[in-house]
Length: 169
Image (cartoon, one colour):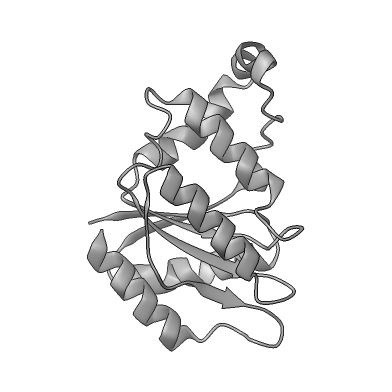
């Protein structure tokens, strides 16, 4: 059974979206797990302080990196933040890339799906995140899931997207 890691940037609407996607994925036969980056309380990545900070937070950072390394596919759920990727996501990616043997190990050859629950359509987050993940070696599904207050989740459509995602794993 293929493993899916669903990563929520927040514990709010994106976490709710993540849990719905986890439920749908499980019904489709996948082994899905949802995490919120807010639960990891990662310190800010600072290059010249990397060793000291990593040593002080080694267990947390390694736990997060292990989730990424051991999964077949990653679903990101995050809001658009100032027209781009939320800092909590960028920070987590930075820590994962410096704690694996090869900086791409957490992402390389992983199938990825990008989702958002934002105030608007979240298009700038979706395109920025796509660029980041492709640079890291992920194979990003062309379809995305974007919801907001005026555009709630269509579970039938999400199921079709998730089915396609799972088939690629």
